[in-house]
Amino acid sequence: MIYTVPVKGVFETNCYFYIDEATGHGFLIDPGAQGMALSNLIRRQGWHMEKILLTHGHFDHTGGIASLRGELSIPVMAFENADLYLLDPYKNLSRHCGPDVTVPGAEFFHDGDLLTLQANPDCSLRVLWTPGHTEDSVIFYSEKDGAAFVGDTIFKGSIGNFSYPGGNREQLLRSIRETVFSLPEDTTLLSGHSEPTTVGAEKQRYRW
Image 1 (cartoon, rainbow, N blue to C red):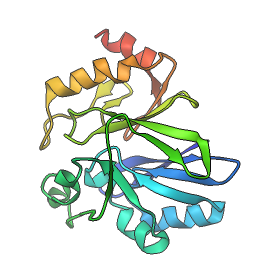
Image 2: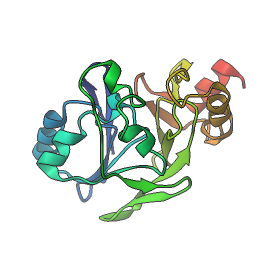
Image 3: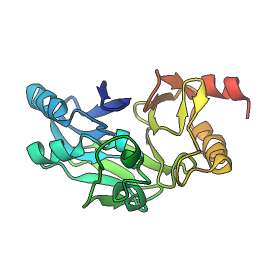
Image 4: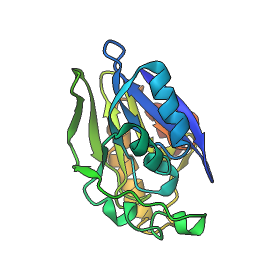
């Protein structure tokens, strides 16, 4: 079960809950703002978040973490080099937009890792490294649900911005061609800042 919750700080970002309906356990993906509101939602629903997962370390995907940690003590996981962004307000863009945002103490996953809910091993997300928007960008793919949480790598009708620190146009295009577009065409792509789309629709749009 996937819930989309738009949260708004400086920017509006799609935050996602990946929930096992049978147990109420799940992962929280990219809590970019409004951490207290997300904590309250988790309590109301009776959910247990096993981990916060980050598609990348930009502040508009991490800004709600401090409040969430304070309320619910949820561990945070990000890609192996994510401290480049999580600990640097310049690279994570928060210094340009308001108070500095940092996320110390993250745990790390690696390209190809399978992140499995402890409460239900049938619920899992595959980590796929997709550098280009940032050096630490990943997508989380659920074969079971036919969905991928793609962060800011690709949007409906557009691709991620590669002009920020660590961005690289050629890397981004390669990540899309070789990783995102290798998924089944009916895979739903759930991004940080657009409506859902599918692999097939974006392939037709770009024909890469």
